[in-house]
Amino acid sequence: MLRKLGLALTLFAFWLLLSGIYEPLLLSLGVVSSLFVAGIAHRMDVVDHEGFPIHIGPKGITYWPWLIWEIIKANIDVALIIIKPDLEISPIMFRAEASQKTEVGQVIYANSITLTPGTVTVGVNEGTVDVHALTIGAADEVISGRMDRRACQMEGDS
Amino acid sequence: MFIDILSWILIVIGGTFSIISAVGILRLPDVYTRMHAAGIGDTLALGALCGGMILQAGWTIVTIKLLLILLFMFFASPTTTHALAKAAIAGGLKPLIDEDRREDGLAKSEGENP
Image (cartoon, rainbow over all chains, first blue to last red):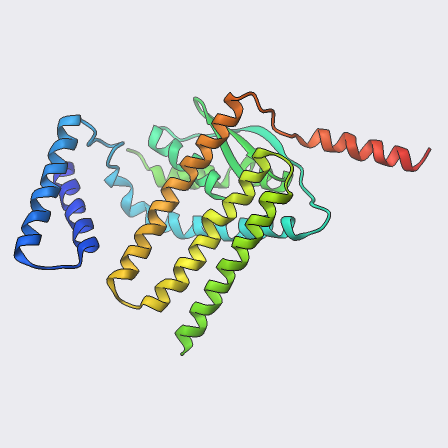
């Protein structure tokens, strides 16, 4: 129930930010539509720990800045490879550990790998991910498991 | 004035990385490696451009909308990249692996020293 209320409130806040017009008529229309959408989501039975993972929110405060910094570093690496005339790439396909317990955690980890340029997640299996990397260096970064541990922390105990 | 300069710097960085990303898509050899180049455009180029535009917009509703664009792109772009990779594999396209290139290198060095 708390989760459904949270979804309705989030939807309303989203609506409010997008509209930018604060008149009673429009506000009440926004309330009605966000409640309506929350009701439909409830009927579709998609408001659970996967569809609306609100419990992850607070842990993201440390995870997101760290991920953004990793993305910036990887971006510069890949950009340098592209600019250099001799194109020093060593593409490699490998399987890496994914020690997250829940599916949401695995998705977070796989998406983090894909967001970092130089590595792309091609497939997710039970406990492992298939990764394609542009260079051996980028592959080592994934194999070292730093991101895996961070994603586990982010996932928490739920 | 200071904010203007900062926003210019960010927009120039974003534009430069967009161009690098496009060059990478042309230069790299196969689908999988090209996806990495496209990833630059999805992340740093987009982030820097949006950051620059946010500084131009100031504390208005436009800033919030730009932040929302960034947020949604951060969730959507890995999904599309993953779908593309999956489609390439399902289509039977084998990724170019380093060993192919290494054989190339060996063949070349042998050719140079007969």
